[in-house]
Structure formats: structure tokens, C-alpha cells
Image (cartoon, rainbow, N blue to C red; front, side, top):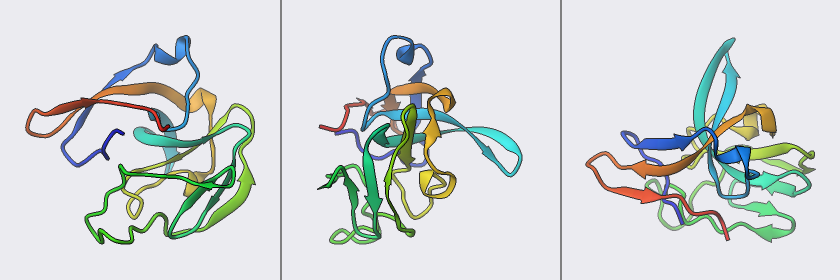
Length: 144
């Protein structure tokens, strides 16, 4: 499983990957978002795809009735009980051609908990490789 992105990391993004594939759960994706009237690009993780039923509490993410295993979450605050989200969500079914995305650092992330599911047209690429500050790198793997 791909670890969480950290400050100083760099991602190599393929902007053509999704020309021949569909985004799936676990992908780290480059999304276009509008924040305070400005268009920005940010990397988020796809948690659910169109048709999925999502429910989020401060302690777990449930997709299609199953608690999501998220070993990539930042547990630096509390190793035993990470805060999954500051806000509750759902249960809500994600519309077709939409994706529910969350940041790996949930306490600081501006993501689908705030702006809702992301339309497919807003996904601009897939992070293929992440280079850690210090030169180490890893390739992204999808959620199982």
C-alpha cells in the first residue's frame, strides 16, 4: 500500500494514464478544484467510485458496508486511534462518473468532505511514483 504523502514529497503524475483506464479506489489522483475563486491542482486518494455507498464517522470510513483498511493514514498524532475525519458524511451513494476523494492527512485536508464528490472531468492525472524528500521513492499501488 502506498504510504501517505508528506510535506516535501514530489509526485510524478501521468496526465494520459486515464485515457485508457478508469480511476479506481486507492489511486492517488491529481484533481482540479476551485478554492476561493481560484483553480488549483491537488493530490487526493480515491476512496469510492460511482455506485459506491459511503459513510464516514470520525473513526472509520465505510464503503459498501465494509470498513475501509487505510494503512497509509498519517498516524503521527495518535498511533492507536487515528482521526479519520473531523466531519461525518453519509451514508450517500456516489453518482456515476463521480469519485469521493480524501487527503491522507485528514485533519488538514480540503477534500470531498467539504466539496463533495469529484466529477470525472476534474481528475487530471494519476500519481505514478512518489519521491520522498531525501531521495527515496515508491510506486503507487491500488487499494485491495
